[in-house]
Length: 75
Image 1 (spheres, rainbow, N blue to C red):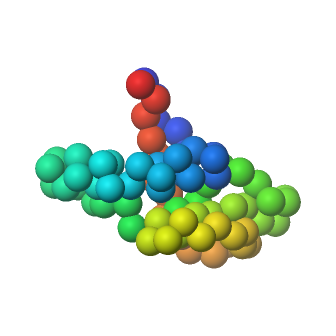
Image 2: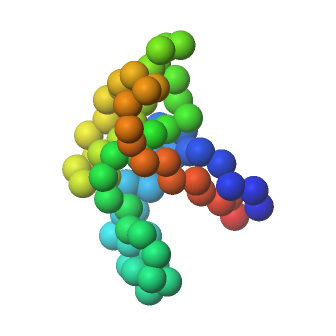
């Protein structure tokens, strides 16, 4: 499949399964789900939603702020 930037809802699903996902990512030796991640869900033309993977907090901010992106693959 092709990689895509997940929506806010999809990021929330990743957060809900973070322990299992991080176990798999750790076994592969790649970056774990930690920190802020942008979603593809816009708040307005100026802002977009992001999710904090440490506790599931979500908020919106300027698209010019710095956050990570985490492309995902659909199976």
